[in-house]
Length: 292
Image (cartoon, rainbow, N blue to C red; front, side, top):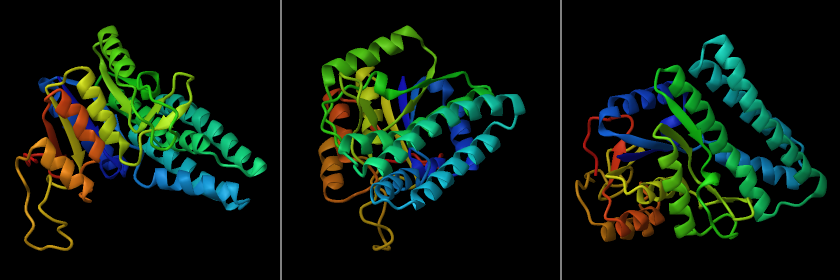
């Protein structure tokens, strides 16, 4: 069984999401247990910006919220064109957006933005994307179930960069997958404390989420799908003759990520290394390339 993860660039438009659905469909024979999704491209940045505008008493946070709202409605309409299904989907989206708006209004009124509140605000990007994409999977004929990772990923209360409570998390995830074998569409980046407070795993944390799920179910492989063909020897925008590294050790991958390689979030490697699970970096826009 495999765990897949698709980042923001892979879900940057409805057409890209449709492409992702077809990639998952083509790999169904390989046994896909779950697919982890980031927020749509640019949404997390806009959520942070809206929260900071609100705490600064700048009412343009409302305009930014409306842009976020419009984007999610447009994606929903293009991904799920059936009128009845779109209506149901829009209702679920609007419930989440309404809650987000209330939180932003509260930040504006009390002029306070704590790390805990910021984590809650940021969580809506993944909630909205994964929920919408799950409906799109089912509409495309792939039976799938939405999984809010906060139900199973447990962390401490170090908001904005929470630390995993491994034993509890692995137990909850394994029980979740025993409960139902259906394909899970999973929110990346987020978890929760024992008190149910929303936490985030750090920027880039959706990669880490995929590794956590992979380790918890002893996956055969964890695939991180991004917008490059794999791990390169250097930034291709700066070094013309950079090339793909086909195979590298966990230690080499960790060292590269700690020294600035953006293709993989550094903490992702540890759960996979602990369980000796291969991690493969693949390109959503060139899916036949073997990757790293």
